[in-house]
Image (cartoon, rainbow, N blue to C red; front, side, top):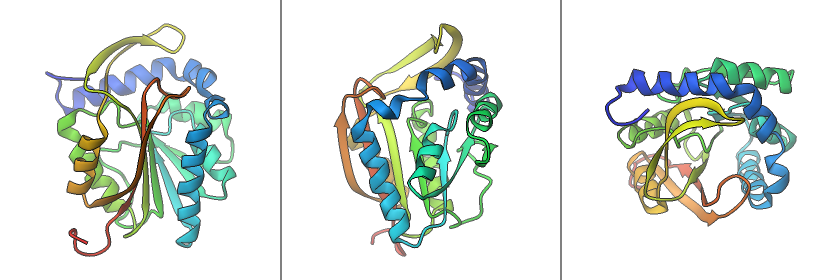
Length: 223
């Protein structure tokens, strides 16, 4: 994806790329949370907020092979996964039988308004072009209950790089976008979210990763 591709073009490129690497992606990332205590702590904090608000369905959007979805279920959260790539969903269903996974796009979530108690986008906004981020966050805001928590993981930086291979050397063709916390916070505010916590860290997830915990504002967007 990237400059010069229309929305369908970059979505299709993302889907094809992850269909190609799905099996090796699942194998190479399956145990990353074992090496990332700060990420586990962020997910635990998110899960605690969901439970404190009475629980309910939680969407792991851009779930890949389902490792975050499965981890959330271990934290007593009723999580299910959505991913653009049918290959990834197949891998998720294979690795985590009995959990709910479905093909879908974060640009047009097939979920009712205010139907989700919490939403996680764990390093899954990294392929969304800047001019599409606002509409994606609007989708997140629409499906979340007022006050519902949103947890984001992303790569920190100022550049975008074309990824032509990965996860075992398989061919890919999509851009990886790095963003600063300030820009992410502005996008979230514009979409009706209040940021409650953010941090930058280095881990097995990302050489320089960012985590933001926000919540859907209640009532008037200014509140």
